[in-house]
Length: 172
Image (cartoon, rainbow, N blue to C red; front, side, top):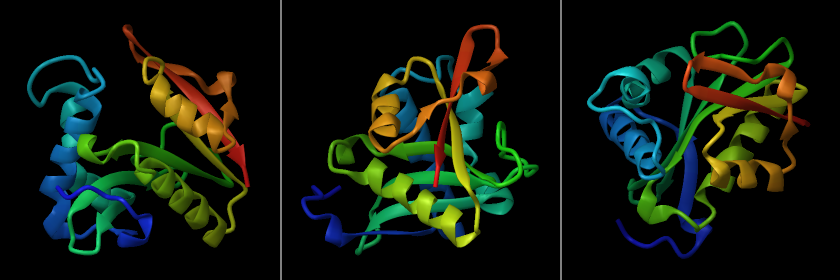
């Protein structure tokens, strides 16, 4: 992967069906590189992260890519009531599974993807973006807070006994 030095060389666009395997692998790699999810193989949440094909079918799957097609990051965008929505309600867009390939970290790719979600919410006429994130992913939390998200503790939840997902919200 070439080093990204200029975000002008990066585009955020809808994912293509021929990219789902690469997107799934990149998402798992990104999460595992920060120690999450725990557990081996494709079971549990790692299997969900790897299944970009389902996200492409049931949500909006965006990628950040260099103009030559090299994938740098991805994010899933879910509307309330759809299969990938966990905490969103009417009038909200939910940001899910933000992942930046480890070699592309620190170059603004995550922020570029989050801002694309803001743009998508505005295009849809929605008032708010929400997300939930594992408590341990503090680097992601710093990004969200820097971009204006605030905590939404009333929507924190536990998908399992050892995992706390903390919620954030941003009014557009």
